[in-house]
Length: 193
Length: 188
Image 1 (cartoon, rainbow over the protein chains, first blue to last red):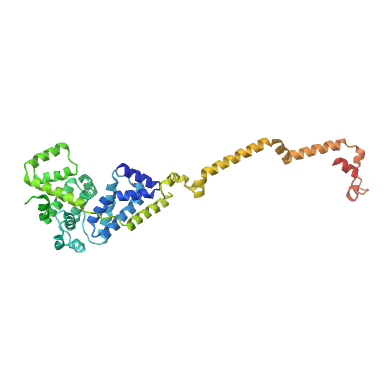
Image 2 (cartoon, rainbow over the protein chains, first blue to last red):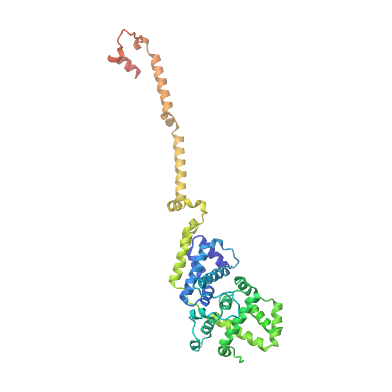
């Protein structure tokens, strides 16, 4: 954990609520970005995001992990699993990598279809849309690495799996995204396959 | 080297989880493998694009609810929420929180100073007014008055006092008669 985060946490514990605001803003991009990738809408992501902070605030005294962000991701992940269970979607976050997204999850997904993918020229929203069609376990590794910037070692620990499994999930995700976004990649990298 | 394995290691390398030695080994493989070079280029493009994806800002409502929860949690722990100016008074450990009633908290130094001043002033007053204070004490005063009365009585003649035994046949002179004014004048 960096110095500013330590100071903000200490200041908040002493009663400075503005320090909590700084902490929330500091981790907004990685945490909210990750949750956004794992939920269907911005409204859902906001619900989960604020619940993560509610829990973090409640249990701040018991926080002992080395990295504050990893702790926040752990809370977020537990909340997302609870949410999926409550919604009875039965989407296994730790399922096999080869399996297809369950049909219930597809029905629930609000990700744009192929027709909408052809619109626009920006690669980022196309990647975001393509990610929504990945199995949750692969999507989670991708989001934790790309949005959260977590090393694979920590991703493996969060998913309670081996580093090789985490790497394999990422590899599958990248391979699928490559297939879906083949033309975009060729334009972007200038490499024709 | 197996290309799939190399691609795993390229991901680790990009995350900074490979040693310098492993990095050089990867570079040697990439120099002779077009497929892995293409894979790396796409991986990097994907990483850049994913990170460039905008993340919407937090709404004021979400931020407000989080900060409100923060204030509630502080209140439950007995820590007063506020800005940096109020921090020093909030650092007290739990066992002292009973003393953090606002008036006591903010006026604690002034109250302590006032108490010390009162004690000092009282001490000085007692020290300077010692004889008077001594004479005002009820037992000391009584002793003095008794002593003076004894001296006065001792100086009076038995005639004046008329110390006769009253027999049961005689009426008591002191009950219904006017007291002797001379005696009164000498005693008082």
